[in-house]
Length: 293
Length: 293
Image (spheres, rainbow over the protein chains, first blue to last red):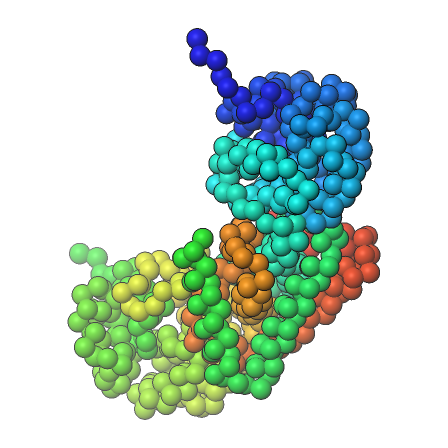
């Protein structure tokens, strides 16, 4: 009989939405954790969570959840992180590692380090994956496989905590990149938050003019479909992200604004060669990125 | 022996790019036209065009191409339409129908009616389909099947010419909608041209900031991919479209600008309920459109 060597004896996951539930399933299924406690608000869903093999135990008892956890994962919206940390604080040990899954990092990491005051290590994580569906029953096996995961240790993070968090994501199949929380937030504001702003603004614009053209939506083709797909994401989740990364999102909008003005001026003045240059440059940039990622 | 009843005895197609070549193939393959003449600049490609069954004859002889054509299709960029019409004008008969495939209609239709002066009927068409590839060898069988096709007859167009053009597209499998050229250009500027502007501006914005964050493109996920896909379209084609629909594209950008300002102000002032309303409204609009198209 071979004895399985687990990376964690016990992981507690706060929040069993799609992200938390999918994580629980993989941690157990891949023998990364021996036990997973699903910390949930409504204990009546616990049985179902256990029967789906998303956790070995589930409930809303902080002592049972956190007392002997080696790793605690906060799979909750940014706005709830502080509250959760205060709840688990009395139970953490020096070796406990705490990570999160939030799309914004500077605010989360700063607040978390302040609350924990060195009592346990906080390592910010942002696995860039998900679905527009919600609730544990929509969990996805191997959700984290081939996903990009940004991990944001700081000078306050112990090397072992940082390495163990990175290793967890790698075993789950993610491609891990290290950044500072600040770098993450600038990068995410450009490549993820700005596209979401633009998609919503585009949808709002087209919708506001629909009375002008009867049958407007019959004219929709692939470009409209692709450019408005992410509008279907959760409004609550994205309001939370935009507000918690306000400064960087506003900066990215400013950059966009300048580039939009440039395009508009070129078109207004029919600067044919400038328009062609603009389009040739974006075309080349896109091809360069496609070849790299 | 049954005799095939063709809709057209002969169709001349000006320009054998992907759009023209795919049309030629279907017209012959579906027995819609008995003969198709591919009017091309470089006669040396004629043999290959004929061997691929994209046309029954091909070359650059206007007399051979147009003298006995019942239908002439201008599968050329907007900027070349007038020149082509002047070339074919000496050969058209009163019953000849001329249509085009351009993405812009007001300018094309006005100029065409002016040149033709009632000598033949011009019926504007815009089949909203295509590919980012080019050249006749990239032709696609049934390219027009299930595509939206806008047809734009005016008060100068005879009913029979309009009906015959609509029937041709319907037999090719397109969903045909009638609009005035002006309505088409407003609608297309909103639902097709504006998304192309926005996608290019987004790409230009992200690219301009790439030095700030090493590994920025490693952070790209589905939202970035979808929002920049159409940046790979032909710069020449799109410069031509933007310039030929300048007034309406600038109007659509103005609408977008206003909606972007509103979003930015809400975020700047942290008007949480306004941001949530904005996102909930776009979400509902998108779901409404999805259910309709």
